Length: 399
Ligand code: SAH
Image (cartoon, rainbow, N blue to C red; front, side, top):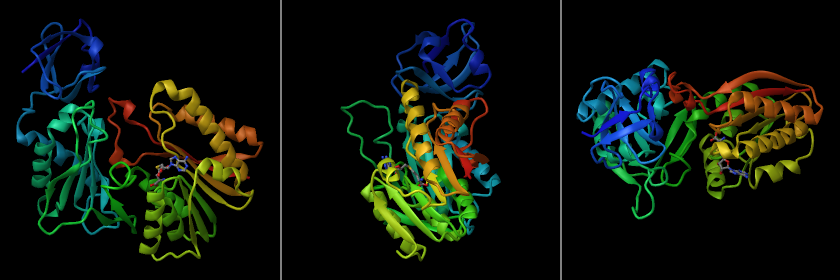
């Protein structure tokens, strides 16, 4: 196995369990590793520190274990997935027959599996590898899922073509790693907090559904009674269904993706809501909000895609969050609520709060923060890897 020897003193972060080795910390590579190989990491003095996946790039090793576990054995994957499932069970998400049967099973560094995401949709596991090592470990991971879930597993779908780090030349194709004989669809109905949603992992964005908004969707439901709701960047209508189930009078859902809007319509019918209580609008949400009459809506949800995908885009992103939030705060009716979010990892919660503060100040309205919103338990943050925190939001009351 290749040995990665660190520069003097560069073992400190690994000793604090941070799971990345940056290429700049490496003194010597003993061997000739391919991308995705398991390598051993050693201090300058020769002390063993960790095993991890090697990759060419600024993050050279993603750590799988700091101990002596055999990372090459099939039991390794079974143990790691069992540990991840135990967390979801502790959070009350994994029980069969409950009101929720979909959750994130593996959240990368949050589950000590850097580079791997697995979402669980009532027995269908949708996997996205973000690293070469995880991409090359797909079949072992699939075997581990079979062992952990047994008969409960319906399928394992690999959706890594857009996330795996390989450059052009390798034609990556998404597809099933496993399908139970009785399972044939590319989508299914899942339950979240008692509401039903179609999830289509082949056609949908990411793994098919934004599971990270589960708790915030419930909260919207709790605040929706008697309100006229506008759901901006609605995707397949998660917040819209929860608003109606919470007693909203009417919901308008806006997204620029025609595919997403078609799915909103199906999700409405699935839950028994017709067009007397709901409208779907395929449009640019920012433009559309500009032309919304003031006071029409007394609850507005603003959940845009990440405006900053890297640090260089931070300034522009903050200005964009400020403009969008100023627009929402100025339009909402008196006594209305704004649920506003950012899923940009590089925008931390203080920076986001500051952007929303500037937005509020620009409108001149009285605004109170009723709640601070986060990612849920199944998107857990490894305490040694604070970079894993990405979803933040505020619930505002606008007088
Ligand atoms: N709130 C959603 C998730 C939102 S993801 C949920 O709970 O499921 C962000 C969404 O914004 C995507 O559906 C994407 O299609 C949409 N989007 C991106 N840019 C947009 C724009 N300019 N106007 C409207 N929608 C946009």
